[in-house]
Length: 195
Image (cartoon, rainbow, N blue to C red; front, side, top):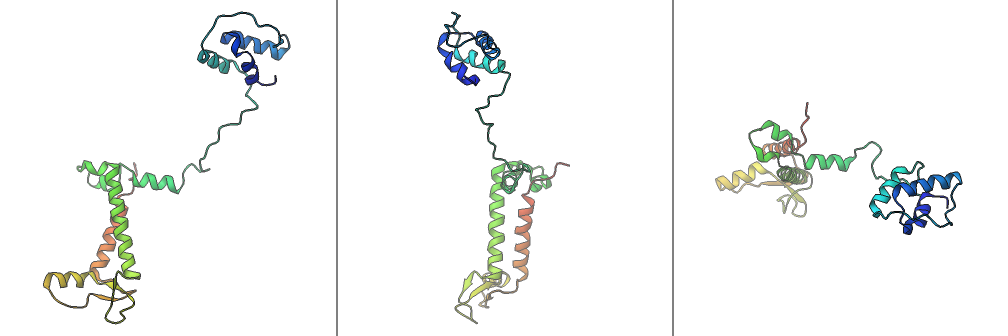
């Protein structure tokens, strides 16, 4: 027997106390004890006490057991960790700007605001470069960029002015403001510095 685990297994059914087993191990390492001889009778103790005492008495690390494997990045923080810290923060820029609104300190609310801001921002950028509408007056097969200011004007004033242009289009003032506001909402959901 070369390892502590083998020694402990061979003596597990003999009813030795933890201190007796530890003493036998020390004697075995020196050469004063042969494990094949009959072991002395001893008081019975439960396995938990025995295991705890044996591990405490063990002076040498077990050579057969590999150290536990950790799956951490070398720097201790990665993109996923940063993203989780951002999305599930309870201390966002917005909650610091509006400290009286306690519901903004809930991670679920921050998650909803991140999702709403990201969806709106990406949808507006998609509209700007690829187009949300189809069937433009100039080219019916191409994607069309929705002109949000003209669309609202048509809805409110009940006019029939063309509210789209072939993509990629130039952003209208209202679309630009919405892009800025959705990007600002994303910034506001980021964790605040504690300084």
